[in-house]
Length: 474
View 1: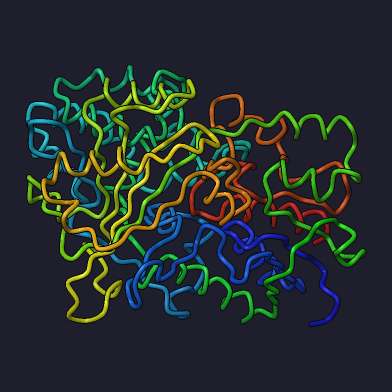
View 2: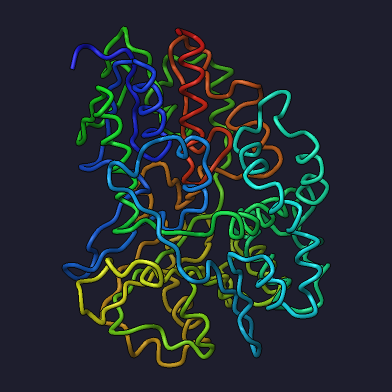
């Protein structure tokens, strides 16, 4: 390609969307990636056996379907398909049937029994708003917001601590269901704003579901690369950028990097005050992930759980909250909150035709950077709800925080969310202002999950950065 107008460094979902958006706007875009293949957290691999496909990091994609950055793109023309399990989510508690989050709000309400009406009251208004709320939350600095009344109504609940909101329910099944959704925030469930995560993820389960990508999450990255190339963009892998001096001097640069990497690559160009702000950026808990190949489905005590694509092994709100508070205090919970995925509940193509093999993954939150192997604790949690689970393990692949960061340097200490997403860093991410995707250096922009709206496979951090580039030089 000719000398690029824009170089995007890093090909995670945000870097990919940024590059595609700029290429579709007519820019000559070069996307560079240090790894041997694009995608960052959007990569799939045959980790353990030939023909058995695992999602190495990102696996379930409600925001992939809901994202206003991804919805308009013709990714289906490049072979992308989202596929849905019968049940988006099952939440497990001791001594009771699983709480099931169905696509149907009515079916979910019926299944929650005495807490059904409370679930409808809590989640129903956000479901009725459709994608208007999630669109607004994914563009949090748009002034004025597109749907101010709906946002104000959402905020009356969303700004509260999830633990307080979960007290609306009388059973551990319902309170745990909401608490488990909120725990995706990696925040204390006693912290303001934690309820917002539970509310939006629960509502998206009803509005768009919690699908997986047919063939693995890497297919989404491949479709975005195909769209980039179709509009004249180029991708270079195995190219590590150690300094801005490694890039064409006249090109605008967008960094899909968290503050730590930004300082390493561009620190000498940045004003001292801005460097100090980036140096003070806070990273959150890490994750410890295990992938298994099983010789058959998980033998759940409650067979309904086998229909779910995602499973929370967590208990009621008090148990979820205690586990998350332990992690935030630097401790490893004895009864961790475990998130488990059964991709074959939606996508039989993950294994060879006729095979009884099952790829399954699970992860739990751990203190940032811990080196302690908690695989046994994760497997014990699964075994408690599925006696005989360990007997079905053929092979396992373990990634603690260090391995997660080695896979994707943006996962600092295993933090897959790009930094703490509490009120302070939701507003100042990574610095305060209406245009945090810009830096003080002309022509240098940021687009990682350390910018608004934060973590998740939605590409909106990249989309917003691309708009800044286009505004500066239409």
